[in-house]
Length: 162
Ligand SMILES: O=P(O)(O)OC[C@H]1O[C@H](OP(=O)(O)OP(=O)(O)O)[C@H](O)[C@@H]1O
Ligand SMILES: Nc1nc2[nH]cnc2c(=O)[nH]1
Ligand SMILES: [Mg+2]
Image (cartoon, rainbow, N blue to C red; front, side, top):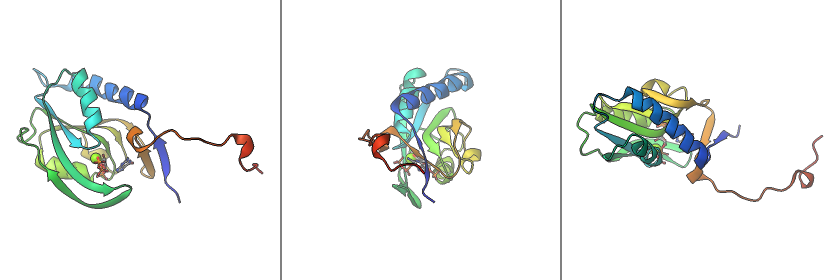
C-alpha cells in the first residue's frame, strides 16, 4: 500500500504553530519559559514562530538523526543541548511525533522539559505533553519544505473514469 499523505502548507503550519503558541502562553510557568529547545531540523521553523509569539529570545537546539527520507534508522544524537539543564522551565519543540523514537531519546536528555509538537501520530502521542493535530499512523506528513508546486494535467486529459 502506498502511504497516505497529509500535505501541510506554509500557511497551515503558521496557523497551527500559532494555535500551539496560544496554548503554551496559558501553560507557561510564572515569569514565562526560560527558553525553547528546538529539535532540529523539523522543530526549527515551529520554534521560530512560537519564540516570536511568546517573546522568547533564548532558543537552543538538540540534533537527532532518525530518518533518511521516509526510512527509519537507529537514532543518534548529533548535538546535545548546552544551556537547558534537565529541561525544567524549558519548552521542547518538534514538528511532529511519529513512533516516539526521537521524542523518547530527547526526553532522556531533558526529562523535565515541557514537550510540545504541532502534529502527532497515535504511537508517539503518549510521549509528548501537548500537540495540535493528530493524524493516523499510516499517514506521512509532507511539510512545505518537503514539497514544491508542480504542473498537474487537467482532468479532461487524464485517463477516463470507468
Ligand atoms: O517519532 P519519530 O518516529 O522519531 O519521528 C519524528 C521525527 O522524525 C522527523 O525528524 P527526522 O528524523 O526526519 O529529521 P529532521 O527533523 O532533521 O528532518 C520529525 O521532525 C521528528 O523529529
Ligand atoms: N516529513 C515527515 N517526517 C517524518 N518523520 C517521521 N514521520 C514523519 C512524517 O510523517 N513526515
Ligand atoms: Mg525531526
